[in-house]
Image (cartoon, rainbow, N blue to C red; front, top):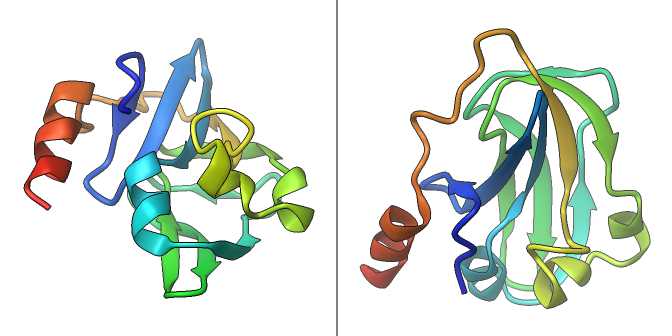
Length: 126
């Protein structure tokens, strides 16, 4: 399932932009590839992040992966529920498993990101 209203990175993050706020998470494909997620490290509030830079860590029973920011701006909220229930990334990656919210920097854009069709094509390649 690839929601049509989101934009995606080639590293399997998704972003939903509403006004000057962006909600970020990982895709269902990423969660499936990682397997059972056991730990999430998210950036501190107030941190300025750069588009495509590593901003956090996701640990699973299979691997440790970086979380990359799909947009640039200031981290204004983290999903605190993930600290005690990281498995939400596996069970509801597009809903309760959201990871952080970023206030977009001036001039920040999603133009370099994939739409749903392009992301589906990317993941179909394997």
